[in-house]
Length: 185
Image (cartoon, rainbow, N blue to C red; front, side):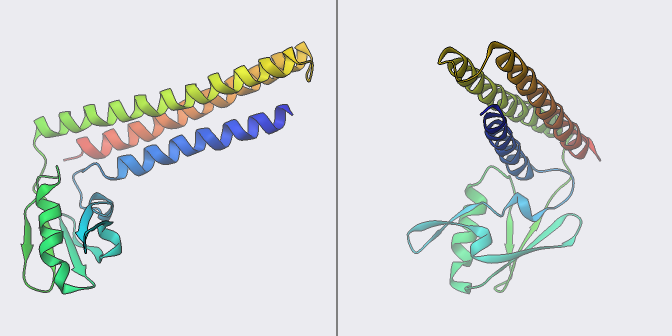
């Protein structure tokens, strides 16, 4: 029973970390990355659709993104979505492809992005701690209902705490890596 609870905790905590990584991939760094625009919602026949479903996105140069729509009638909508986003990029349309030139980040913008990353990391830590809290409560209920002994409860709590510490450490490592990417000139 405790093993099942710990497996559930690990799955939920890994989900929080995966969510964090997906979130951070959309934050701009010094280099161009398709992840920057993949999830951008584009109006397609009245339905918001992720850009990655409407076009191929490539990186021909370190500071350039090339967006090649599958259907050329979506060009205007893709341009509108890029302009409406908080990316601060201007699309260049040549009729067949859209080019996005990423200007170098200013020091001020790097600091702002670092703060955003810090906030997202804290949200992920809170999510992991919430999983721990929920499952600690479950373990105490098991002990209260005499499904596990007091010793098993203590062992389960210790294992859950070790798992939590491990996940928090992983979140910190992800954060350090992203901070380095942002501060890289």
